[in-house]
Image (cartoon, rainbow, N blue to C red; front, top):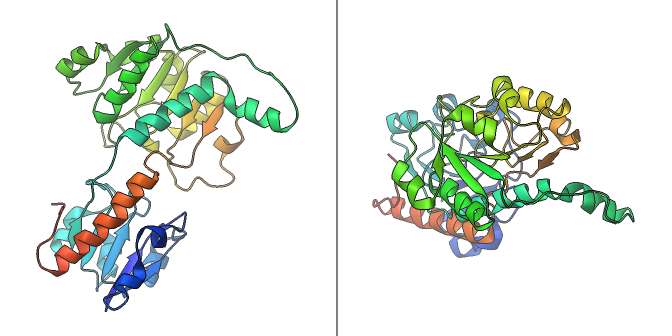
Length: 316
């Protein structure tokens, strides 16, 4: 019997997408709904498993965790990139890692949910409607505003197209900006400093790495317009979270729409939860029925292929 640990099934939906009865003679599944408190707990819980199903980057599968899991042979992750997994250590242990396809459009869609929610004060208006009030705020229009996109890859490009459809002026910067793609999209490439100074809305769409960690901190907040909004559906550490809280508290910027954080799940007592100018979502960018169906079905398909000696979608 192959022992499979399904990690971080926050919504407890794995069984809705996979008929585990179908596999009961071959696999033994244990589903973990909540994150582990620390690595020692993770090792204690997972030490007897042959396989880990990892949902995005919710659990850090570090060198020390891998070293502590002597029986681990396979890791199935959602998506074809997972920076929470120590690939080098896995290779040393001959652990096979396989990924899945993923739709990028849900993240672009939720980016616009945050933008629209902020500029039309939806957080306040929804709360006030349930308290019996009517029309308590005045919103803003998108047409004619400047949308600054940091990272014009697959998701950034989708966000740019929608911005153009709203009649916005779209500008972009990243260290390796594809100028031909920017030209095709009708997006103006500008410097990082000018993007912060000019943009009414700034949206982040770069991959977290050393060069983009703490990309936005106190200096950048001071460059931004007092009326501007910051959107992050990429990764939390791209923004210095402490400086973000201070910028929101002091109203250095008008507001922030966030789907990602330094620590996830976001602690219940985190200051961001209590700021009226912060619109927060619990990392829902990729969380759709369509994506989950792909994730779990392809994880099972990958595992079956691994046991047959022909791994599919292997990460190397």
